[in-house]
Image (cartoon, rainbow, N blue to C red; front, side, top):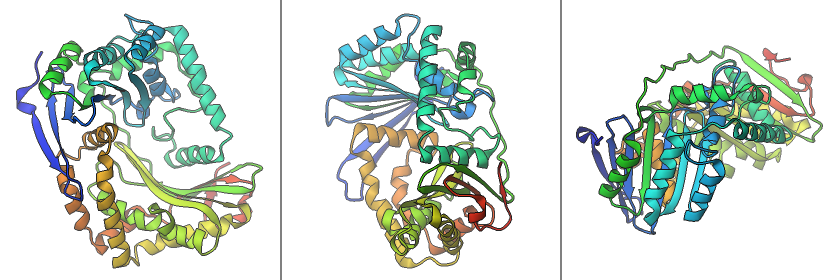
Length: 445
């Protein structure tokens, strides 16, 4: 099986923003549908490898939240050819590193090795992806460990608040949970669920292979064909889920006997395909994304001393996204901190200065080259542009996209994505509902 010759794309990126080096990305597709992206980098004799499969936690079966994560973890716990311990021995013998990770949109199997061991690294990764054993005894160990992770984090008020916020906002939508799943669902998953999930989503035409490092493109193309061309494509189930609507104010308080309140305030946000993400990103930098210089930090931390940590961010996925402004403050100042968040969100669509916009632009153009210091960071960048469908010329366009953002664009993004009158509020702390002075809020029981 050969690469499809007609699909090859080659882009050379020269980083003009104070960065003297360049890198080239080759993109192609095997006949079985596996997308491959290669970038030669000869700084050190290492290779960074990543295979992502569109089988993240958003695809968890209802009532089986945590399934995707368990499936991913099992990939390194034994194949039809080697036990989990034997795989670990092979990896350690190479001095290599192989890990799994599950995010909302995709599962990931990544590895790093000396360039002379690239063939062996690809062999191990392909074996784990194509021939997992799903041994029941190993599954029980992995499941118990994942449950313990969830329970250990249940003492962390930040984790508790974040989970409560997502569940309150998304309801039954599959973005309502962290990839780890819920303590109430993780033990509902059985070995047959893993096999069914794997058979549904793990296929070359649902996967992307990315390699960065000390190799020649011809050599790695030969090795990828050798180890992945026999992976059989499948018909992938169609997946779509309408986003729930947020029509009012909803809140939840999780009582903990602690001196501070952990506050999460937010609403739905743009997904990965949003065309106006660049101005939205700059808008959030001004609001709460720029550390101590942001508006939220200035009003809540610097002027009033209510909190040491206050920020805001957008989290985006292929099937949705959300915005959160978060603050940790004394219980007695929680109400005023929330009022200040609402006030600053309202002000974003009315009052933005040229100086604020210029500072945001300078930060993003100046910080951008730092994304390519290491092979892993370059792999992360290539993953992002492929998953978000930004186009391989994104780097060439980035500085221009930033420079073209206007004050009107910032205000438009604020009007579109910031909703001070329709929001979700999750609080973890030693307070009651009566101390939070918000009109028309519906408190969850």
